[in-house]
View 1 (cartoon, rainbow, N blue to C red):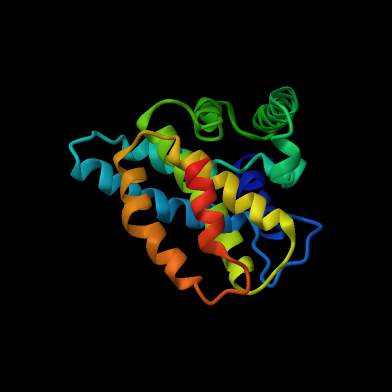
View 2: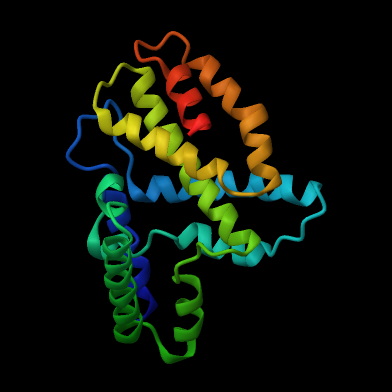
Length: 209
């Protein structure tokens, strides 16, 4: 019981594999994904600050490091499935949030309950920090899909992952998104030029969508 239970539960995130059921050249755990999202978000936030935007760093670290904690209870639902409809996505989020809330009620000492509710909440919102989280999360989806496509993985789901994440990112109005599209994405596409899959064409189609 107590916070020990929470600390112990973090190991479960190392065992949950993203994009389950598909052939992958490299497996990625939810735990590894969360760590990378924090790293992306730090740089994205620095870009925002360099353009005069105020960033709440404590909030940013809390929501990026814990944004997928609820997957301990429901696992990683494939992107095409969980975004099949707004109703389904809302239902999955409701289940996930309900199970996180139950975990906090059952295991976290009263003194820390409000802190855990804040830290483990759904962090994607219209705040600067929430939008940075959204961009960072989708960036890792792009990099995971890109690695598979570059290696010649012909699973269509990785094309869908790459394309849908890029479309979502370009819709977000942040300075760091402009920087990503202008300076980072071209390097990524250039690196994938020798891939047996035409990453350049997929990228152009996503940007034009």
